[in-house]
Picture 1: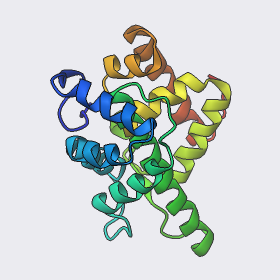
Picture 2: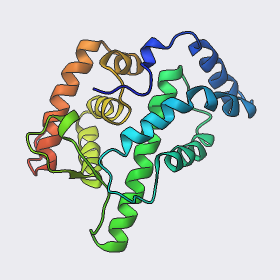
Picture 3: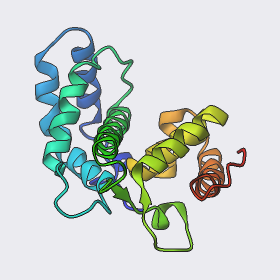
Picture 4: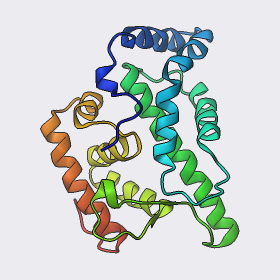
Amino acid sequence: MAIVGRRIAGITNDSPNVTGLLQAWRNGDDSALGRLLPIVEGELHQIARRCMRGERAGHSLQATALVNEAYMRLIDARRVQWQDRSHFLAMSATLMRRILVDHARARLYQKRGGGAQRVTLVESLGGSDERPHDLVALDDALEALARVDKRKARVVELRFFGGLTGDETAHILGVSTDTVLRDWKLARAWLLREIRGGGESA
């Protein structure tokens, strides 16, 4: 499993600074976000590239544009109860996923199914074939999983899109690493069945 930029769990020296900037931003310091972004810029671009892996050539969004659009949405998220650097990066991954799905749905609406963005689930979700799956189908399956088991859906989102390790995901969700790994295994199988039309419960 690739990790977002450098290992988030291994970055400890400037984590207090990131946490302090997040708290300052939440408390009304508009300059804090501008000071925060250069610190996490590398990780944000790694998240963007991970979210876009498997996309078709010539995609209208590139990694830098995806980071910029996520930044614009983050401006409206200042009241989030930020925990630390990992929490911020996890939220950024969620926003980037949402942006890509919005673009995919808009394209589907315009072209009635032609040219939708695609994402390969084989490596991270453990599929046996190499056929790429539609990003919209993955989003629909994740939404269905969230209705059945919200935590398992978050585990997939954080690990597949965010590239977080089991330990990092456990930290964000406040559960044990063993729980995360168990959820990850069950969720992968559930999503693959859902995407292939199984529709079974978690």
